Length: 69
Image (cartoon, rainbow, N blue to C red):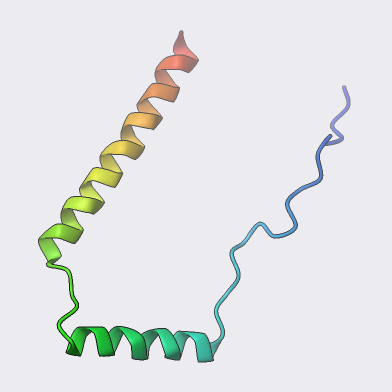
């Protein structure tokens, strides 16, 4: 059996790591947005996270069910 992959791996498997300057700029922007009142209520964020988790679990369950069938 041939174990040689037929496709080249992607050039970058990991996302790029931001530089210190990019992180500081993002922090400054976030702080400015918070001071301006441009925030999202925590409950809204929690609902979005719970919905994302539910979608992920549904896809996982669907794959497991398909593998059994």
